[in-house]
Image (tube, rainbow, N blue to C red):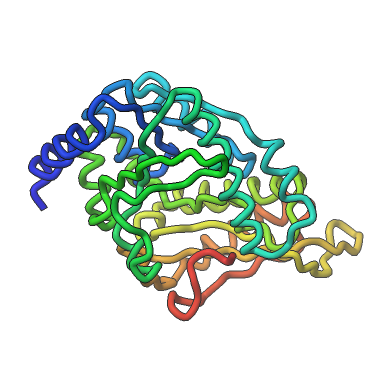
Length: 307
């Protein structure tokens, strides 16, 4: 792919499509939405509002990192909606219901913001695997009807690219390399890495164990062979021993996969020293955990995330 040609053609297309109207984008800090934000910013300047919503399900340090990168680069707005999301998720166990609730609240937040600035367009970071895996159901430039009847025209600047191509475009746009190679993170956040019912305590535990996995994988250099690496807090309890006392704590599953585009994924041979160190740190630093295991299933038949 000719990067210069793609960037210039896309910016021209966005100028023609959006014109002098206002647009919003949900900026997660992931490579897809980040690249989209910069492309659209180049096309329409401050008529784009990049909205970063904290749903209380983000990784450790993520809010500071995303705000630090974008608050001076874009027309950027940070919204802390933690209470709104976590209140709605109380008592919910079914993973699909969790996703629907989170998606619904995201749309409601964006609708409120779109109404404030009279936006006409919603920019989405859809890439090729998104619509291929959905059986082609995601359509280019479709209209999105929001809960209160507001209609936004959807723009998807990178819908024909794969993840490796998106990263190349991001580097060409001078986005930080750390962000470009940041591992993908699901929109529902840690909600899909806490199995069963969610509460603030479980989210805090999940945040800690994911930070430990990331820290150890990255310090070992093994992250260069991986697409994603994370920990899942299951809703199962396992007997353990802490000190001289019998304990009954959570079971954690560590998942590490290699992939090019997330369409398929394989579990590589993980160094035992890395697995052992992660397990020892989690069980010693997070008192609620008594047992750590490793997921070894490829995609397919498994998916990368657990929920």
